Image 1: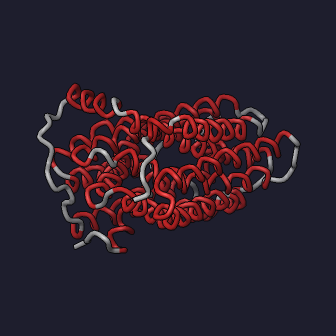
Image 2 (image 1 turned 90 degrees about the horizontal axis):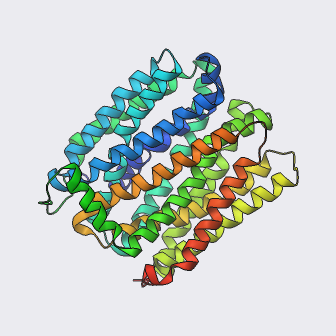
Length: 399
């Protein structure tokens, strides 16, 4: 059985939280091919990403509170099963409308493992130890978004975009087998709160009543919003405007992934010395620097695709430093409601990212500027939010 404080458990939890990046990053190089193959516009194809984010937000409404009541493991298995079924529908979609709907369903399944991966960390660990575990998971998880676009680009070139979804099916089946056979139930005391729509809303209201929770959720929203802007817009900007082919784009995508892995690796060492907030402070500074640098290079007319991907590596470092620590800080005060706290954080994060993606998609029309402008805005706002909320965050101690 998988046990706390083991590399095996960390890897499994990391792969659960990698389900979302896998579901988006693997088919990113194929977005232009999907648009051409299904006779869809750029905006319609962009909706396959935004629909995933909206489904992700909707699914997280229930997974956390239900798992607080009935346990993590059965809810995990349900989510993985739904993800695998929806991936099958994606692979055989005859038109863009079916693919958009199947992506929404796929996200409903994928949201469960990601919510519960964070909740399981809170079940087993506390404080900076939880932040360090989430950073370790992030370092391992970073391999997926690094490899997924490259694998997707190779698959697209050899077999076409539909086979990318076949790979997702295999991943879902493999994770379900590991969870079913090796994962213990992590929740120590199940919640006695009723499971109903209004009961869940009341629980969310309780969470939002805490200023520190609102602050850390806001930091997670802004950080991921900028990252998703790059995820959703970079394939069109780098391929259409800067002329990269799908495989070259996949390799350029590794800049942000390398930055992210670097950030999570640094966080594992920083969090013990500087605390959760000290690590976040460095992270939001990197977010702002990366976004502003990208916008400046594009406005100056630098013709290389590096004007997008190199500054995004700095932003990626910021993501790796900021997001795991913000998540750990948000969940820390609520050991009895870790599932619900993780759900609400994910709902806010993904809904905001979906809105960012939709607005960006409407403005991506022959110019690269909307992409860095969006990323710079989210990075600067994250820095401003952190600097303005010292009292709300409570100046958390290092240990």
